[in-house]
Amino acid sequence: MWVYIIRRLAYNVPVYLGIILLVMAALRVNDPIYGFLGKNASREQYDRFAAATGLDQPFLVQYVRFLGDIARLDFTTESWDQPGISVGQLLSTAIMPSLALTVPALLLTTLISISVGMISAYYRGRLPDRLLVLLAVLGMSVSFLVYIILGQYFGAFWLNRWLGYELFAIAGYKPGLIHWPRYCLLPVMISVIVAMGYDTRFYRAAMVEETGKDYIVTARAKGAGQAKLMFVHMLKNAMIPIITRVMITIPLLITGSILLEMYFNIPGMGRRLILAINAKDFPVVQTFTAVFAAVFIVTNILTDVLYALVDPRVRLS
Image 1 (cartoon, one colour):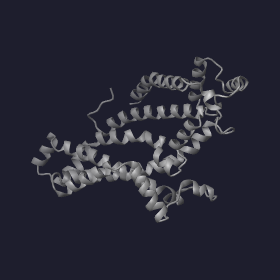
Image 2 (cartoon, one colour; image 1 turned 30 degrees about the vertical axis):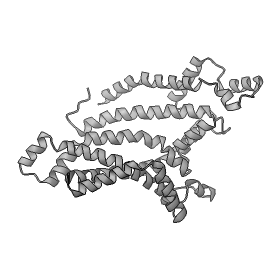
Image 3 (spheres, one colour; image 1 turned 90 degrees about the horizontal axis):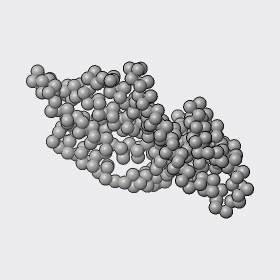
Image 4 (cartoon, rainbow, N blue to C red; image 1 turned 135 degrees about the vertical axis):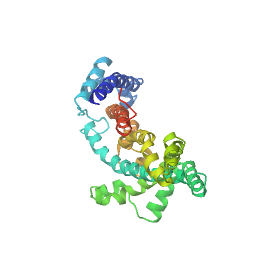
């Protein structure tokens, strides 16, 4: 297995280098220095800023230098928008707020959606199944922004039950586990409600597809009950699509939910990236994009490894 992992990593090195090359080239289509300083900046200001940031060097030199920083995990480059603060500091302070929102949302969504999908498949074609599918479709049909607005009004304003993340910082508190329900429960609930509609239908379709397989027909002919078929045989064999669905979501744990972080003032990765884009904070945008690309590549490799672990029919070849 380790040989396979190393081989996949080697295959993805050119892909990652290409992604970094395209990102750096795209960020330089318009001059980032004039974008940050403004079009009225003098030539002296331009040259001084270019020399200080290394943008006066040829593109290939900048590319190799940035790759070297990534290889050494050196994120000490200073933010343009926040002088004195490195990109690494912004990165480290933004990860935990994102994880405090996305990890609980992923766990709850996965557990609830798989359970509801299995129940719906168990009662396929009957009233419980139709009601659950109807609720899933309704959940998918309503815009994410509608849930956010309703949640903010009824949860934060009307009930005055949940506070924003930054209010704790303003009050002198450091948001921790004990305060988590007050600053993160509402956006997590919104995220779960929105994602459940899509995930429930996906997991139901995966379970229904398994009902026609030969091993189910054989087990049923041997006298296995419907509950055992659903919750023992079918669940085990449906792990491949379940893993696929979960692993697709994992990179979003790092990138964060941009809409939720922006509307609830959660200083996570998604919000930090949007603020950096608006502020033309070139080093932050470049580094965050490189980190996100690495997370996606590692997740793809991990997905294949998990396939082989849960299903002996899959071989790492």
